[in-house]
Image 1 (tube, one colour):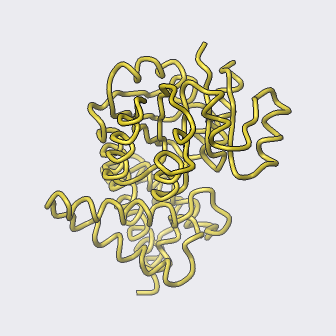
Image 2 (cartoon, one colour):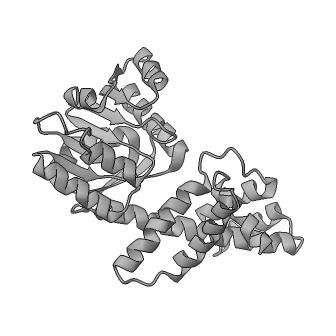
Length: 289
């Protein structure tokens, strides 16, 4: 059995690490919050109190981090995972980052004699908790096959998408649709409210009509009840992702008009200090305008 290291115990990472532990992976965890490490130790995981300590105790290292800069720091930094070891590792980044970051991590790990997989995830905190994530993986097939059993402990849909960067590209395609569909759902429900049509009644029709979508299904009750605060899926996350997508479109000379429109709305939501509201809270900007 491979020794598995996990870095990052946030909204997504905690559920993923829990599933690895519950399914008998030989697990070591590291996060900046020492109380979370201690809690996992009490449940049977090994704790590491530095990145170098975790690297020494692990053959395959999974990271689930909040932003691009953190991924770069932890994977390629001077005090990062490979800074104090010459042993060959498989580093897997489950974070949503830009394509350049995944390629930089791949080249860095290659230079260090290790392997790198970009393996972003979809399914939200509930999918992470339930072990039902979709995991889209880019990189060489050999390390993918070595990690596959562990991917299956965390997700029900695991797909090797192709060479380095293909997993990240697939996640950004998914996030483009998530952002645009959320914006479209909010716009439709703003019209529903303005027309004095009951949202629940509207949903009965929409659920069996061409206009239905997963994001509409998710957002309708949140918008109906105006429950935007305290969300595990804040607008900050989708704003980060759509900003990455907007830049990728520019880099690849692909026109993404719906992405640009959605980004402007999320830019304004952030400007209004509501980036921690649920992403369905974008309706507040549509209503304001």
